[in-house]
Amino acid sequence: VSRVLAFQFVRGTHSGVAGICQRLSGVRCLLHLTVFWLSLFYTLLEFDLGSQFLRELDRKLGEEQRPMMDRVTMLQEKVAQMSSEVTDTNPYSRLMALKRMGVVDNYEDIRMFTVAIIGVGGVGSVAAEMLTRCGIGKLILFDYDKVELANMNRLFFQPNQAGMHKVDAAAETLMFINPDVEIQVHKHNITTVDNFEHFMDLIRTGNLLGGPVELVLSCVDNFEARMAINTACNELNQVWMESGVSENAVSGHIQLVVPGKTACFACAPPLVVASNIDEKTLKREGVCAASLPTTMGIVAGFLVQNALKYLLKFGTVSHYLGYNALQDFFPTMQMKPNSQCDDSFCRLRQMEYQAQEAVKRAPEPVEKQKEEVVHEDNEWGICVVSETVEEGHDDECNVPGLASGLQLAYTVPKQQKVEDTEGATGNEQTLEELMAQMKSL
Image 1 (tube, rainbow, N blue to C red):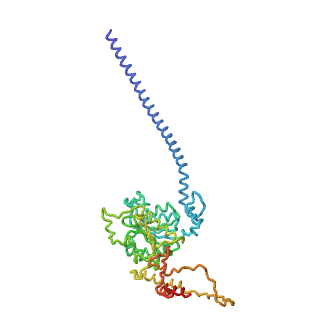
Image 2 (cartoon, helix red, strand yellow):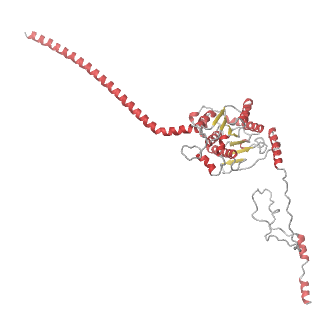
Image 3 (cartoon, rainbow, N blue to C red):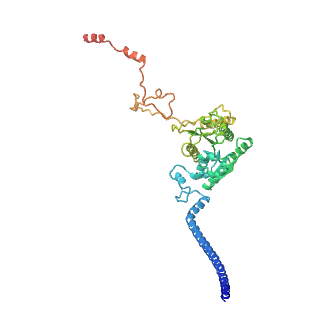
């Protein structure tokens, strides 16, 4: 009986455990489903909250950036006419102040000018940026070189522009700075025969009205390119300005070249490129010319300042201006053309200029001098003269090498002539003769 009872107990227990296990399996599945739906719910909830947060963040950023974007958009819109109105959104207000202060008669004329810049390197790129900020009408850029990381010690270009052509990188930056300026780029070497003819055509017909450009700026770093520019400008009778920086990066110069009137580059090449060094050797690995952004910025500033004075006709246009950073020396001079210049067009322009000057120097009709009035009662011929007698400076001031505008601080007293002294002593009496005359009295 006990065994039967034990067997029935075990079988009942097993059935109970099996039922419990079945019930537990159902609960486990239900728990898994509950966890899944809860996880999905929280995921969707977090996504919705995250989206709302992102939308709110985007809205706040948009509100903060909208004024700046509005200003950028306003700047990128072309300005129909320059205005002197002083506002935060007027890019020309401080430039137009030059007119209000009497420095420039009509600053608005700058938008009618076209300037060609050959060489968009350390000097040319900065000069192009300055002219763009000044509101020049049109820029024509020439350069076939590309931006390199080695150029980052200079101004204007950025590391992310490495590998781009310099003219393309410059045009991208300049058009963003001032969309009013028309930018035209050319990626070719002007020293080749075909490109030289194209270069001359652009100089001849490149301005806003299809005529010759108003000014050419040479910012190249080699002798061949300078001579090509010089030849083209002499043939076209085009005014241009030459610039350069020395190989030690501590001196530079600018030079105005007016064909026929001033020395061209073939007449008197500046010393900065007359060192007779083969510039091609500078391209060897590990060998290069030094460059300082300070010197290049100074030379570019001199160049653009001289260009603005020439275009807008204010101040004195420098014919030659040098810069020596070691001694803070700024030499200036005016170089006359060489009558025996190797460039035949330079000699032709000289003859044309001399003929024009001869016409200007034609003698003017001389006015009839007024007859001196003689009083009838002046029988003794007495005339009234000034009490102060002007000292003659003919002999004293004719000092060789004395610059114009200078005079001597004092004059050397004249020596008495020997014959005058002898004549004076001949009339004098001796002491014995005077004593004899006194005794006879």
